Image: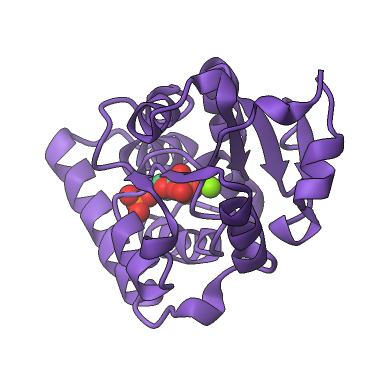
Length: 220
Ligand code: B16
Ligand code: MG
């Protein structure tokens, strides 16, 4: 069976459409340094696609730190203030390679297009990079109760797009996101490192390597 069943593409934001993963890392590393916790780019992999509070839990665990809820909220707010400061100057030139071309090709093919992101800053980023009008629905961290790897964000995007989960392809850069897509019953293209994204149905290094011809040639 080929992938002719596809009616919609759902894109993760950080690491797939834009390189905000780097700014998340800078902000978490700054908080970690303040707290005296060692934090490397390798540690950062576990935070990708994971919600802000879950990311903080992972960081505090790494430092063997136990703090109360109020302190956690203050830490998360501090990290977010730095992150928002870093992303302020983003514009359409910050889209990752191949994004515009692939979105346009999907649109011409008649696919519905959605966002499925854990970020609560997604609308700000989409506005700065002028992507808002290119998407039919935007489902982000402000719309769901359970974060990735829970499939809620992708199932809600499919529902809002008016398609069945089995008719969707998800593009994801994080292991937690791949798990969420597979649990949603969707075809998943991993974007990035094939070792980290080994549960995806297909892995490409970036959307630059993605085309409708490639999608058409796939079989499951
Ligand atoms: P925020 P995605 C995720 O976005 C990021 O990958 C993850 O690193 C971040 O912690 C999460 O959003 C929450 O982001 O702090 O902006 O609400 O990859 O699902 O688009
Ligand atoms: Mg991501």
